[in-house]
Length: 87
Length: 149
Image (cartoon, rainbow over all chains, first blue to last red):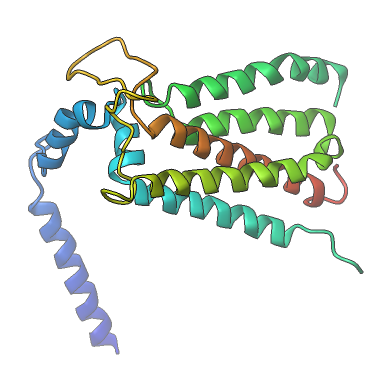
């Protein structure tokens, strides 16, 4: 059990160290094709000046639908817990 | 609360509501949008709850529930509107009709009549967040503490 713990710690630590070493230099962009696409086409395609709104409500509408569902679930949970109960 | 807080709440309540509506309405032009503007407008409700007590708003729970449901249904329906292409396709953008003005690439002063379904979705999400956060604050204030109402 002790050796399993040590081995898993070494694997996790090695993974983190490898990730830290393999980082790009500070400030260098990693994957900028999608950024360039949004910068270039959010105005002509969606006709919105605010690229963030264009992404949130158009390109990733599913994400916003899930966010609205999360809010609805939170309100439902609060209303379920905090209700008048007969004693 | 004291009369100072109540008076300032009377002054600030419409201002907060109008500013929330402004942030929602200009969501496709300036930073902000439905979630942020709805949170600003919900802060007006929270202010009323703090200043006048939760009992003053306890009759509005049905209204908040209806607004929340209306916002969710309107958002999903606007998503279904673009089902001819894909779900959440922006069919109104650039069509020349409602919110259909084209936008050139690059910096421009901004036109409120653009972005297709985005302003409508902003309003739907804004009402949803306003009603949701307002209902949460109201329920916490109504049923949360027994001694400090």
